[in-house]
Image (cartoon, rainbow, N blue to C red):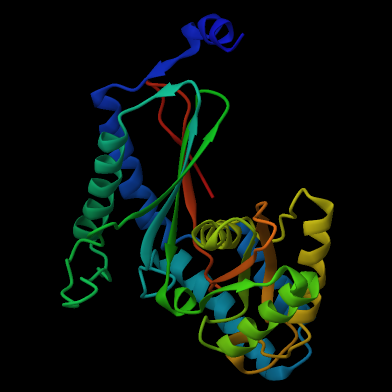
Length: 308
């Protein structure tokens, strides 16, 4: 049956040609530059909402400054933050798209390099041991690429420039199954408390649960990159998101760690099943300028749709 279905849909198969990889390169150049300048609408709304409900004078002052920073970046076409981050790409590939994986990665890398050199942008990527800066925002295993395969004939590339302040506040722990949901909550709250002002709050707290250690960490990064306030479709996971959101915002860390009602703009969880003797939990935070931008390609000849 699978073979018959494949043959029936054969005319819908999209074979990516060499010219198209040049379009991907150009799109990735645009994504990297524009994502550093243009904050997504959902993040802007979340910041404004945090400001309006803030009761602490210091918190309101800091949030007002963050909102003004975004406005200044808009008006003067400047970067929102000087940290251009680690370029992380989330790539969704339709099952009817045929592509050369090596050529795709080469196009993404080249677009990232061109953005850095032609804008120009500050390159933050260094050799881990020698600390030598490559000057191109690329290097060994960088950009970081995450793939997801979906139905259809679309190709979507989303960049999430991940600043070091929030990335350094990343955590993973292999809890015991006996720790249960209570243990998950306790660990997440400990991570947020320990992070304090370091990840530039208010943050988006991305949480991964389940899978293996590496899968769990990847899920946390994926969760942190979601649209602010977008609930997990699983009702049990969504309930845990809501409970943690309330608990984290009761901690009083506030904007830039100076106190206030909003420590987290959102709490997002991505979950996977796991081994019966495992209970992995990962936390990955996104700083207040939760930057992201995506390009969606739907055909060989059309320009990509650029969205957040």
